[in-house]
Length: 112
Length: 116
Image 1 (tube, each protein chain N blue to C red):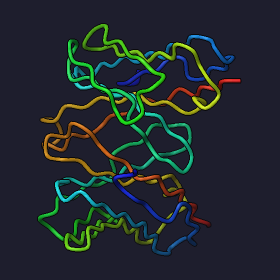
Image 2 (image 1 turned 30 degrees about the vertical axis):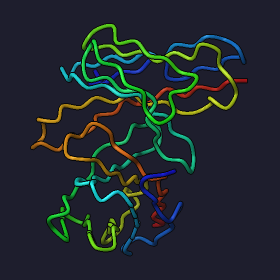
Image 3 (image 1 turned 90 degrees about the vertical axis):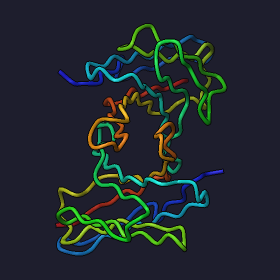
Image 4 (image 1 turned 180 degrees about the horizontal axis):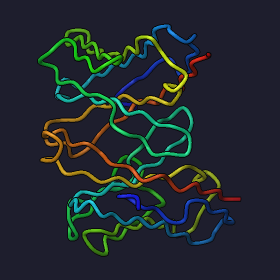
């Protein structure tokens, strides 16, 4: 049973548009939610992360929105660029970072 | 040189063969992980190790074994490979206290394994 459910599996967005990727979880003990970005032929790399004591975190064009009551969080990419084309993984872990549970991934294609 | 190095990067083998994937790191991290990536399934944890004497099973450890030879080296073995072990395998390291206490995972570039 997947601990973190991610959607959509793939996403096509025009350059300049907004990309939105959603994740949901069940385990209320999770207290740290990172997003990883993976380019073809490379390993995933940390993009942005949030703790559940805030509802939003923004870093440049990337924003995480967090809804603790709904047990959902999402990644928004504003003004999407072709260079953002990659696979994105949401994840969740508990405070000691022993194990990360990853979503199934979203392949984003930003068309010029 | 990459901080987390995986060898081989690509390997094609036959059913029943023994395969070892190796990972070495120069980050000085105690924690090391092996993940498997399959399309539509994301990253699944196979094994993890918090120091040389500590080995733990992940979500999908059946059919795999690991060895932590040193702080910097963590190997994944498939004793008798089968076709459904065809996947992309990633090694990762972390230090919970680094990077502002985020537990950030640092991944290698992956080892693509094909079992015929």
